[in-house]
Amino acid sequence: MSTPAPDAAKTALVTGGAVRVGRAIARALAGRGMRLVVHYGSSAAQADALVEEVRRGGGEAVALRAD
Image (spheres, rainbow, N blue to C red):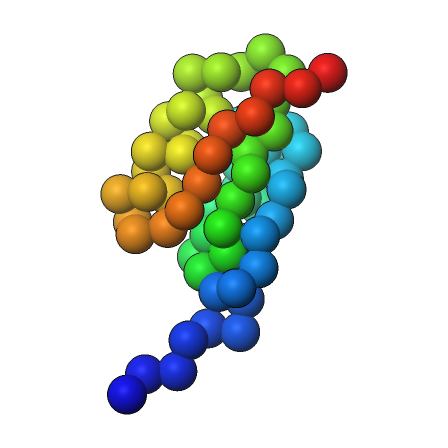
């Protein structure tokens, strides 16, 4: 029986998560098993692409536009 990752039950809100440093942080957190809310202001395509990448890897993620 495998033990779940310690962060698997956590959700992270990554502001600016669609591009640059925020994207790298979001990927790292997803790699730890965290669910993601990827915040973006104007980078909808990049946010959606990251959400799909996380989902393809078996993770959970949503994109959220906010000002």
